[in-house]
Image (cartoon, rainbow, N blue to C red; front, side):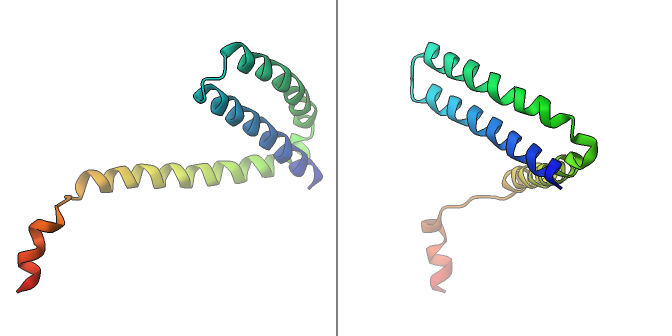
Length: 102
């Protein structure tokens, strides 16, 4: 299980780096600062990922399988929410008050 744990930690570090870079970009930090940040941290974290991918067959696939299952559930959830919102009629509450008073 240590292979799965190492892979999970490495992927979490990568996602945190990408989210922080997006946050910095959305806060209008100069693009060169964001680029330098990404180059430095991605170089380090991708080397960790390459080392941990050697452990993929030893149990790292468990992390990937769990991630795929959870991602599939979230994808279905988002799509079904969009379909529901498209099919549900939104009405104004003040228009319904006379019907509620009866």
